[in-house]
Length: 132
Image (cartoon, rainbow, N blue to C red; front, side, top):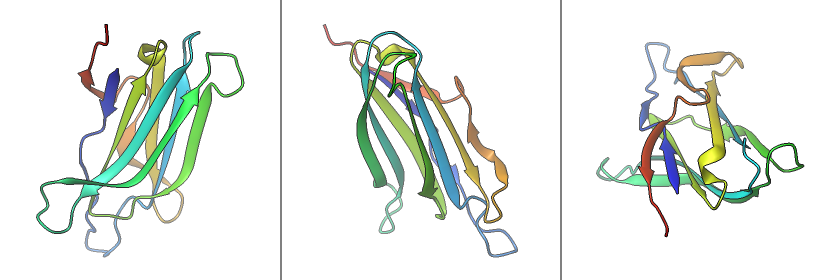
């Protein structure tokens, strides 16, 4: 059960008063022949004590094997206009080791924000649980 994460990303407003990232785009694809289940969590720190993660977007779905309908899911309009946010993708099942995750953000004008992106293979593998 691989778990991939961006970690917590800073998105604080600069002198313009506008946070750099406004929208998040996430693409999850199955590059293997076996299907897998995915859990996507997009989180921030809670406002009370700034130490605990608080999910603000969560979805679970299945991905079919490569070259089949349903092997790719794209989420392209997720609000991320927060001081901090992160993305965590957990994959479960026979094909879980063959999932590729790509994430990037856009500013208010639709331009890519270079500091908030993770292409295939760049997200940190933060955990693997082996189920025997």
